Image (cartoon, rainbow, N blue to C red; front, top):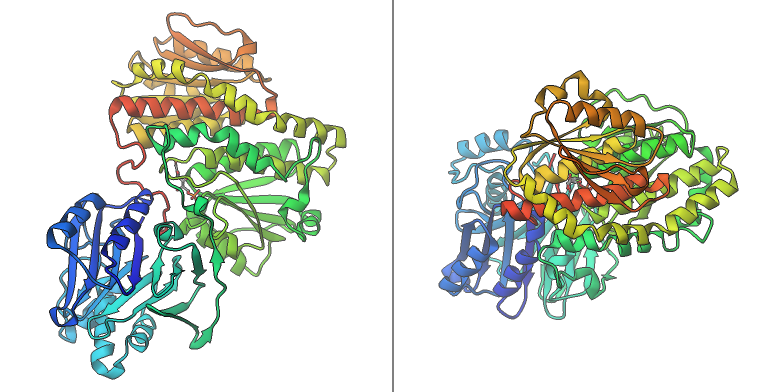
Length: 613
Ligand code: F6R
């Protein structure tokens, strides 16, 4: 998704901007650009390219781009096609240039108004109206950039993170935030702005997170922030170098690295949250205990992989906490006539904490007369909007996830959701010996994931049988159905093989018609009460000439034959099945994608952090 970097210094900032954009590549984008002011008399130098940041780097080198002031952007198209013209920065009359994250909803009305006032539009973007509005305000007597930006944003409806420069005021960048993240990086004799602190890790470790409605002016030696017309002070946070680390190490892809980091990520997520036999509910915060006492049911909202985590959690909340749980896709939640039952805990699950739909659902819940007991964020990014806007939060300790396809975030989300089920279960009849057993099981999880990862070679071999397939079916029963959905999502998003997931019991109600020798059927088969029923579903597939790939608990004694390839997983306590069985499905998609030669860490059309609706 779009990324912003800006810098004002007493040295050439072009390499800083380009490095910043490289660091934002993980968010997904389709074009990139940069605007610099070197000598105000020669104007604003703008360079834009379609495709990878490397193209922009090459173009900048060719043009010898330099300037002490600049803004840069990676664009993920929302309005207007992918083209050089539509890439940011956008300018007005060669005077104002700006970069924008977000969507301006009333851009069409503003465009008509600006055309009537004599402005010519060079792009199909919603952003260009902002450049012209600022220019209009400057020319109409505002004079200084800050009041001109203030006047322009007062006209906008929608979401924006903005970085603006003015050729006639070449010592400053004005930035504004509404609905999109922006962070200021504080340097010595130089200052920076970015949509993610990671972009500035090479120049500073001191950051100011702008809050909703903040407007700021940066010069090389000052940072001034306003909100609602008043000067405000914002705390400077120091972020360790580790948080900005982006190294694939011995791995070929970030996704692969992140799959293999799962034992440690789960260990880190458990640490401080469980003792040997007990959940430490203080980890949810000082007031969490009192909140949990009031909870009678749970409402989970999330998108994509995080939504699948929510679907798994529903089973745990029912069986362990004996509580009803509703799981909603975040993008639909706020468009329904929601009935909030008394005693509902609202839980937003998100890796990034910046997913527009999940944030909007949280804001809707917050605004909805606050009928929920409280809002809880389960999130991987401590500084995210979701964390800041929820009543309380608990962080997955997955470390930064760079691969667009979510892996370690999912298994650590599951880890925390299981802890949540235990915490709520305690208040609803879960015996302390049952809690102790569950916690002991959880403490064994990192080693079991480690063991499961040792299936890597076997799964790599198996994946060869997928490379020429166009479609696939994933089956799971009960709590394994969301696991099958997650497996299908992983396969389709990184290998581009069409994959559909079904509850295994649904097979004969339709999808069986698709089964033939060209349709691999992937099944997750743990050792549980539904096993015999699942075996019948497997026979239904074999009888129709389908080819089965079964990930099975080693304890069930399933053997490979002509129509069925079995991969045995280490036996594990039943409650951990959804986490363990996810791992081989991640590996399967990864190896299938390697064979297909796709861009694994940046699958086409996708973004790591989906910050638009
Ligand atoms: C799939 C994937 C996405 C995200 C979804 C929500 O691998 O990564 O489906 O899970 O975009 O993102 P977060 O969790 O950041 O809210």
